[in-house]
Length: 458
Image (tube, rainbow, N blue to C red; front, side, top):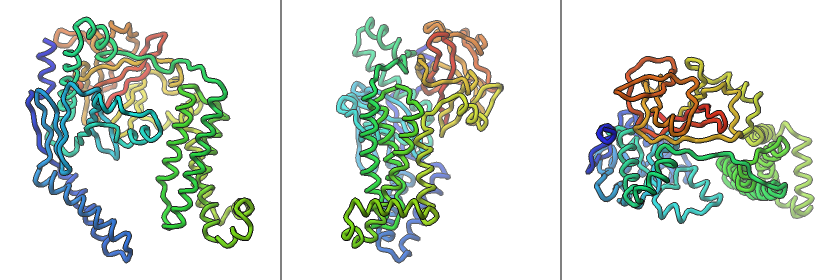
């Protein structure tokens, strides 16, 4: 019966779909191409070249995928194939390690990671940055380019076909012991205690400091040479600083002193860049006084004339607060933040792009630094009620509740289609439907109460 139900949630294989754009996407692309054409009228060689290259690139993409509809996704019994303007790539189902969705620039993708990609992935800053920009996948399928496909159904089809191959590789006993418990509905413990000595903080600070100096110098050189404020450089610096601390200190909670140091390092890039700009603007001054004295004089000038460099000060202060408050989860800060959050039938809702977090406890009482249990539920297992993009109710099967001894506080037991579910009522009354994406339940490790439910929605 479960397999029959699941077949209704997935496409029949073999399955293929060609690219197609919604009207909104056509309009946005055409407007962007026109804007690139306007750049050709600007009396600047750099802007003209950039406008021409970008305009031609977008036009080729639009014609190939939106007009001719040549790109396609094809699912066969053996592999998944994705064809674009730049070529065709296939991955065998047996070579897939993971399937997930991610968002970048407000566009949703199905990301597929192969076993080879996972094995060769290095654990370093460049990899973390690359993955953050959506580049850590063997295949990335843009859902916006295939508007006629049901996103949940396509995701479920790929997910279950890939995991079916994993099941075939393992013995029945090994599969049900390892896969069902850890992957299918499984949980992982998070935020475990890490034993970290004070030297870890010193190493983290040193790495972050060096990175801040280097990127600050690059930032200043680019500003001087191009007269353009490349905000991407300080942004990369922030990522590097956060990465340095997370790499060296793991999940260890940072105290207020370390938070302030992170903020200072984030803002330092701006002032290093400003000093570089001042020194490059007056190279003869540097030659007369030497580098160290020139730096000292530049710093004194910045301090004594704050109004002259006001925009730099404001930018530096913004970066300081981004660094100092990042991940800061004191109850006072959460109380302030929850004022801006939407409340639905007594539950706090936080939406980031197409991802929704539903807090079953008061948001001010939720502490992500405490030890939690994560229950990862497969697509097609739970039910939801929704109106457009608003979640009105969420149903958890009794099997998941019993498997992990979940406390059903805030949940109501109901019966649907001869099955028992536990319903989280968010104040709506719509038709129940299968939830096609994976969902995540975050539990208090000791009470087993569900504190947070994380979903994604089209």
